[in-house]
Amino acid sequence: MTGPDPERIPVVVASGQSIERDALVTPVDLMARACEQALAHAPGLRGAIERVTVVDVMTRTGPAPATELARRLGAGSGGTACEVSTIGGNTPQWLVNRASSDIAAGRLSVTLIAGAEAIRSSRARRTAGMARDDGATDLAPDAVVGDDRPGAGPAESAIGLLAPVHVYPLFESVVASRAGHDAAGHRRAMGTLFAPFTERAAAHPYAWFPTSRTAAEIATPSAGNRIVCEPYTKLMTAFLGSDQGAAVLVCSLAAARRAGVDERAVFVWSGAEATDVRFPASRPDPGRSPAIAAAGRALFEAASLAAGGSASVGVDDLDLLDVYSCFPSAVELAAEALGLAGDDRRGLTVTGGLPYFGGPGNNYTTHSIATLTDLLRDGGSDRLALATGLGWFITKHALGVYGSSPPPAGFHRGDTSGAQARIDDTAVETALELDEAEQATIVAVTVVRDNSGSAAAAPLIARLADGRHMALAAADDEVVRAMGELDVPGAVGGSVVVQPGPARYRLAAG
Image (tube, rainbow, N blue to C red; front, side, top):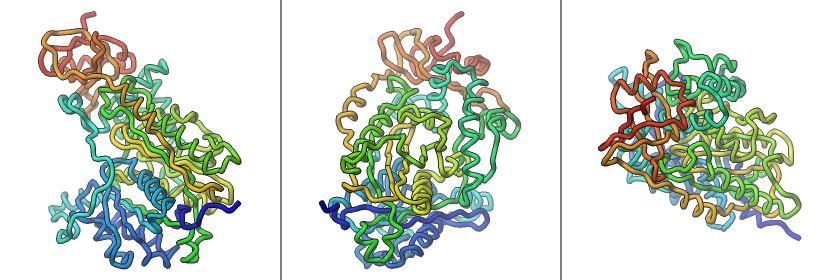
């Protein structure tokens, strides 16, 4: 029996990464560096690029970063499609899954996926009173691809619950409460989880913080490691101040052969995506991710189909892992959903994760894919790797399995349509305000702390007697101070009194 048509076998044939600590650069500068590094390994593919996709950039880049990048690179032959993605750390893996589907369907041969952030440079320009570098402004806007629905709904917006650093700790309170941890004990557990991440960052040439740290250093609050938002210390949170870029060159095996670089091929075995109940306040259990679980099942079913029935592929068959890691709860929910232990012998990251490798906006997962595929390329045959990415608030998910050897039955994309419908049906109705005061049960809670360590806000999600959820802010400074004195995980399951009118609460008597 012959195998799949090489024109329809998707591979990652090259990747590149960039970092800048000194000179002032733009995101397109960093993307171009990463792309040139990738194209140096596959020069014959530069003129064959049919599509250039740029991952959504937080810092300003002008209306057409993909077009600007393609022009700088001299990519394609004049008809190259140029596009940008919507917001989300899931998008790099989703873009690889999409490209692989297009190649498998015969719609695409060669594509370049790139992204970067230059937040350090942007801040330095602003501090120095310099004009912003907005990139080329005379170009027609690039096409936009991806899911552009918002990450927060009316309930979250009503209390200003919009920043990831305030939302992810809500999920963490559920994880900690379920584990029976107090805040200090849970910080120790999170320090133990993340200490190995710092070891990977210390060994990675493109990590922003190449420094090993002990679990105690990460977990212990101090002047240099303040509690940002209970129970997270600063060293547990994604770092968004870097200048980093990454790119991956995806093509058909036939295109790689024509360019004489097929020996560099890393094979995309399978991909899958799913979305949790979109708005955090509407989730029936903010401490779990049914969508990651559904995407994982579909991913491994697809990988088993790619194996051609010769073997069943599961999480235990993977050699390398990179689990999206903006905050501990992202790792914990994904590990539970995929059946991984926090101390898995393989390690849960190949980069060091967003707090230590760096969190270049939506583009972190491009770095993890680049690193995984480089390791597969250099590590021998018959090895498999997993990349996961998520967007918004553990909301949008994309997963991919990569292999150093070709999948006997070609690339397969997992089907999560049925599971997605079931997940969507679990959304809990939310209330924005009440006519009368009512007691409610705390579902998830955090305390935001200022630079002095004082409580500055105490948002929470509560369940009303009729089953609806509310996102609530403290009624006044006195309530904020009282919440700041509580052990946050211990508050889950407790009671508050929802006030009439806008979404505010007071502590229940007793």
